[in-house]
Amino acid sequence: MRPALVIIDMLNDFVHGALKTPEAASTVEPARRVLEHFRSRGWPVIYVNDSHYSTDIEMPLWGPHAMKGTWGAQVVPELAPREGEYVLEKHAYSGFYGTPLDHILRSLGVDTVVLVGLDADICVRHTAADAFFRGYKVVVVRDAVAARIDKNWEEYYRRVYGATIVNSDELPKVLG
Image (tube, rainbow, N blue to C red; front, top):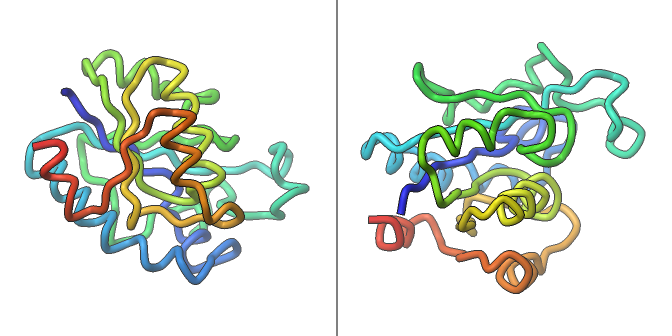
């Protein structure tokens, strides 16, 4: 297994700002633990972050959030990217849509994506779908994601993407 951590929209606007939810803040510490596990092993870490223009397709649905160049579009400080980690901007829900994510994963020989971030039922779900369609194994860290609309997302991920769902403290056993 060659895993990569994909951190989705762990941004100020989703945790503290325009689109915050009560659950979002509780994902930061578990996501930090997962991030440290990956860093300690030298495994790839890739951030896919909303960085919106006012004309992006989701603006009428969600209103302005994570606008390019603003505080709201920055990764929360607890999970700040380090030199050598990949940081990709996205303008749609999926981390694959219109980004070089697939190219980066393939160039690194990755076969398994470990997903953390916001929200499990929107951007994480679309990223998981696109990972599945491209042949990657999908692992979702339960306590490092939060759902905005569909609180029963886990069964969907298992049945539709064959995803493995684990808590952050179980991940080292799954990945090694």
